[in-house]
Image 1 (tube, rainbow, N blue to C red):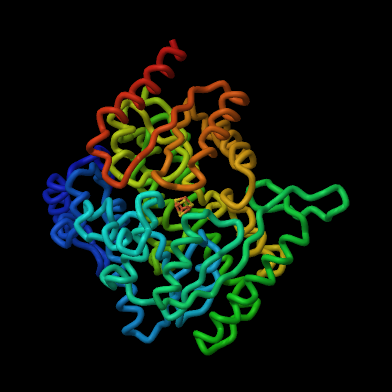
Image 2 (image 1 turned 135 degrees about the vertical axis):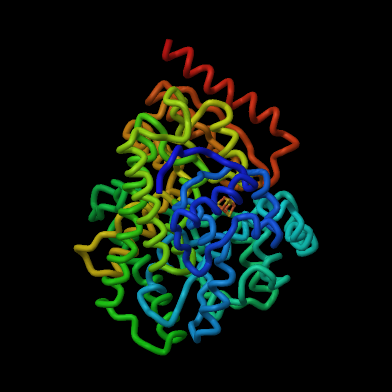
Length: 459
Ligand code: SF4
């Protein structure tokens, strides 16, 4: 279904979809025109540019219908787990049973952007004492209180310990509001001492065996809570099967990233790459459909690569992006400024790495969880970024700070210094609020300067 890949507006998608339907496109039950989501309140979509493939249309519709999916799951008798401050571990356990689904309440982070602040979640946060000194995840308790964005979960889990101050404080406030939380502890990851047994983690790091065993014990408590909720056993065989399905998602994403970031002509825009990567965290509440969405997207990208077709000029500057953007529109802006995405660390690269399948499942999950880039030293994160920059051949790095985020105060400096020292490529730090229109000229100048610097170096 590939013809002339391009970035198009939501208005252009209207006629594009009619063409695709006339050509035989069959949509899933959640399919439909993208602009209906604008009518439902997701106003920001009207300001974005989208990839024009049927696969991307399906991706967007899949992501934007998650709330309906959760309500349907509950109506069908499923129990719902909200997995907070957990990027890709508890959902793997939850989806190992058939009568439970998981979602990611922290994803409310993007509601102020998508709804252009019209949902009032940040005002609710203000009233709860969670003011602008917190990062945009402060929208999450607002979503719980208003009850308008996802159903109330039957079980809420949250990791503590090596967790940012913002989330610890916000989750504690949430519990104080009457939402009981099962806390599980994640220690600060450190390198093993000489007398400690080292355990290899996905992504290439090592942790002391004692830390991995501790996390495995903590996840054991989560396992028990899921079993109690589901009313059935979550045994090792079910967990191992769940890990294999999660790895299917991760392999599809690895294929997408490899082609998307390394092909000479960019086959898929930055915005759709970001959206696809986000699926690794909790499969957007439907693992089977998530796999089908990613299979179709990867097939589209393979076709484009085979035809030498892309969405951006061949000379686009290859940029590695650090941290997710609170305003999705900035992914478009990178491309408007002459850049393309060639590598990402959206704070969950451990959720993209394959979970080990050759060790007992609880240990495998513990290894995956403790590989989280946000639970260890920033220098470890920077080393992984350098390795990925080399792998994907990026020519510059953008460190995108998140307003109010406690870890962003110093981490950006550490990452920028290590990248400059090791790779000698330009790095720029920007800050992206949920609606960036007011500072767009400044962001554009910074990104254009970065692109121009690389072009100058190429000459
Ligand atoms: S401070 Fe950073 S890691 Fe913590 S919730 Fe906010 S964005 Fe996430």
